[in-house]
Length: 120
Image 1 (tube, rainbow, N blue to C red):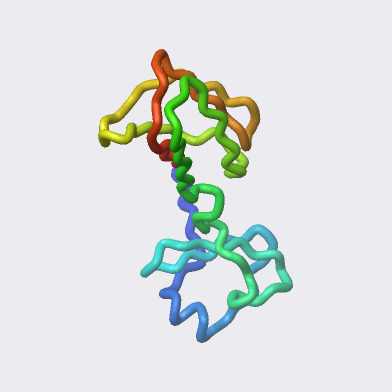
Image 2 (cartoon, rainbow, N blue to C red; image 1 turned 60 degrees about the horizontal axis):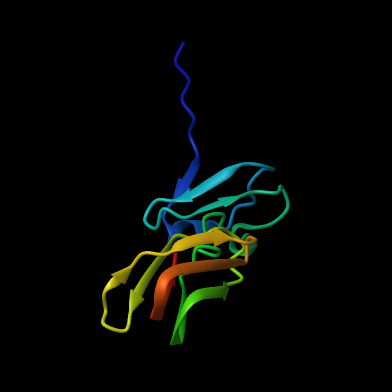
């Protein structure tokens, strides 16, 4: 048995013009932006937030000016981000990353390092 799931879909301008109220749990997709909204049965399209907004996946950059073997980074991303460290010579450096919480991590290096941590 084959099952097809079809979402309500329109371009962003078409959805804005018709401004529908999606049923509770109904998913609407903008075909030109690939952004989606999920209905609650009462809120019009223009007032619904996008379900796949990039909030929470914003990058965070931390700069350690003085060379040290331990960096403690409070990033407030509310997740465990991927970490890349680049030293002051613009070389990628590997350190041991420990996630203390969803908003704090510690990087330990074998030698003192100054540079920038890029969290994504």
